[in-house]
Image 1: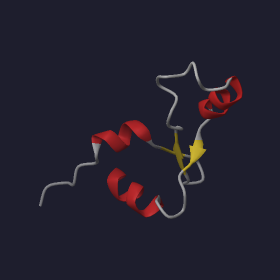
Image 2: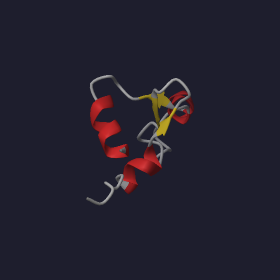
Image 3: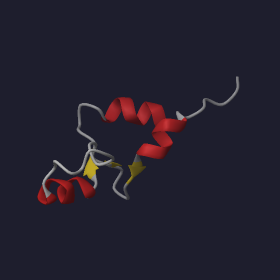
Length: 63
């Protein structure tokens, strides 16, 4: 049986931290930025942790 491949899209979007949590980027930061406030854009810059409800699916994509 051949090895299972990881989802290429997931490899580009998620990172595993040292403690095993999954890091992700925020959405809504790529275009139409003029109508968004500076505070909102700044807060979208920082990374976030994947919600516990989605961890199982994301880990499956990365296997």
